Image (cartoon, rainbow, N blue to C red; front, side):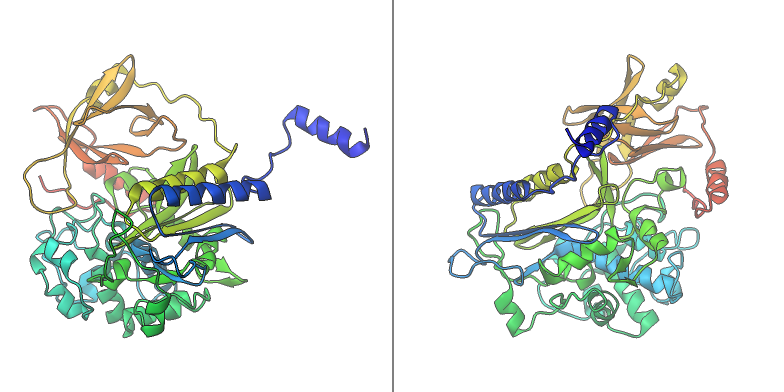
Length: 498
């Protein structure tokens, strides 16, 4: 046995050597390709593409199948595909760049740029809508109405806002809860056009696409682009879906090739830099990854939807990314700073199960044996368990209409806290402290309880809920929570109407 073999044996015995990086071998890459292709075939999908990158290199870029059901044209890395709501990440990235250039501030109100904002906010005096709230989905907006989703022709923003103005009545005070709404990106694009004097699509091209050399990326398809666009299909993988124009391009209008998503993913792994050029500072990327404008964020929860990025966990490893749903196409991109790896995956059919299976296969490959071991949670007192237990009613709803309120029940059992949903599912909440919790299989707090006078808010991965306390029963006042926010340099908590 030579010196190097002896040293390797010693390091292994002491546990001081790391395993090979996940997905580092040709055999592993071939196995992943076969897995993705098998999923594609099982779900009758004509085209699937994916890439796996590090901050410096490309481990894999694969395009499988054909651009449509005729089978005549193999799907290649330079063919175009629609990425849907991953567009929101580009919108947030462009806004973050403008903020670092001091062209705007994330905490500025929309009214500062648009004297007549395209929404009705009953709480405008105490809770104005701010730029960061449009990006974090905390402006209090419901999502687009059926009339807006069904609109299928390219129009300017003024025409788009006139399609169904009633859909943009603020439904709850801005700056409290995160609830997904495509309208926010449309409003933000109007702000960007007002402050820069440029058309939104041109601004994104100059700010994001050109510095990243994403030559194929576009909001508007010309004749040549249409020839390069893979056909989108419905759930059966066989029924074509005609090209559908998003009412507001800023929320889902981008078409791009798989190849040109490489620098986009690597930008985040390199903390805002690409090819030696800094597009965004490290602090700017970190800000994009974490929410700031929810009650939970002000109470210390860093998990959630940030600026065009949201955090999730796989094998107790944190990823950041965003999904995309364009009519006939599904996509997802994500990266892990811990693993220094990221990916992008897309299919040309509206088959959510297929995309989910592909995502899980790629994430399994990336995480490998890197999964973290998490210690047991904190012990809660009987009084704390009693305070947090009970029925919580939803305080937000993504779509307007309907009278039912979702609810979730929390119960104490054997010194632990459990959630029980209306569908009967039951999950343990593991305490990271008195007010922050995670679920089994998670390594960071993903849920927060926010005590506020006569109620307790519950926010995080479970949704947005509140529990009203019994008469005479009070908890930490919101004023103290606001003071805590100031001490941690967070925006103070806006007033919560009773």
